Amino acid sequence: MLDEFDRKILQVLQRDSSRTTSDVAEHVGLSQAPCWRRIQRLKNEGIIRAQVSLVDRKLVGLNAQVFAQVKLTAHGRTHLSDFAEAIRGFAEVLECYVMMGSTDFMLRIVTKDIEAYERFFFDTLSKVPGVQEITSMVALSEIKSTTELPLAN
Amino acid sequence: MLDEFDRKILQVLQRDSSRTTSDVAEHVGLSQAPCWRRIQRLKNEGIIRAQVSLVDRKLVGLNAQVFAQVKLTAHGRTHLSDFAEAIRGFAEVLECYVMMGSTDFMLRIVTKDIEAYERFFFDTLSKVPGVQEITSMVALSEIKSTTELPLAN
DNA sequence: TTTGAAACACGGACCAA
DNA sequence: TTGGTCCGTGTTTCAAA
Image (cartoon, rainbow over all chains, first blue to last red; front, side, top):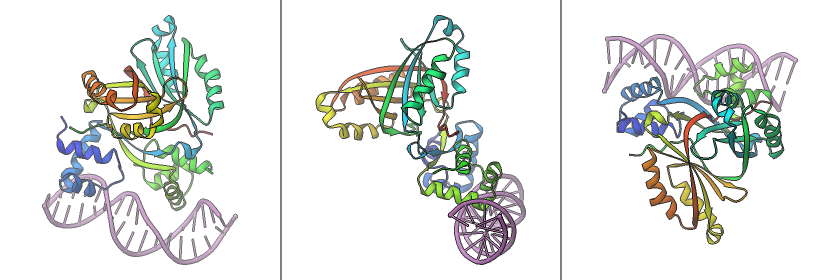
């Protein structure tokens, strides 16, 4: 579905989407027009989902990062979409995955500091209907954090 | 450090950075030139770290997502930067955080399928010097996944 | 592949609050 | 100091020929 050109285009753009079409074209070994058409197609097909600015977490004062493992009650599991809906509404939760195994969900949560997490934990997350147990794991520092998917092949 | 205008600009751009300066300006209640100057400043100060395209993981055939908790040996912990260096070199590892508490690291890993993860696990991750124990947690589905930091205030 | 019109980024000059 | 309003130049997009 993706040929070598597409992959190279995506590799460039998921590193820096501010580069011009001709710049990308030169880098992947195409001329400007066909490269532009490919990028359009990748956008139309949803393969390029969005083009966003990445903001430095620390520089805007969001110093706390916590992973939370959430278990639902038996009743909560039968109303999973309610839980999902609630989670999507929390700006502090950047990621939430349904997990295989003993814990039901894995969340990555970002707040100003640990006190702010504590408030989010007690006032918001623990009050979501169906939540049985939450295990919080505080991240101390970041070794790697990227949005680049591994597209090499 | 960030006033109301800056915050609004960042909110818009971390959702869609393809919008034009005048478009952003109108949205935040500024005119084009001062808005442009602010965006430049945010880039220069590193608050806007990068501008990237987000690629749909499933549509490019990366179907497996795994969280791995890694513990190091006592010796490994004294050579933490070697471990960090190795991790940064693995394209499959999108995120890696140093954790507080019993597990040393939390990794988010993306591969084509579970078999590919298995290979990465045995052939690569478990062979990194200093690694003592790895607990793998497979993610089944995604409830939320965003790069938008919570900037409301 | 080339071309061209329209839109846009970029950045200076200058004034007003 | 920061925003507003001009202005021009050069680049980029995008859809034609």
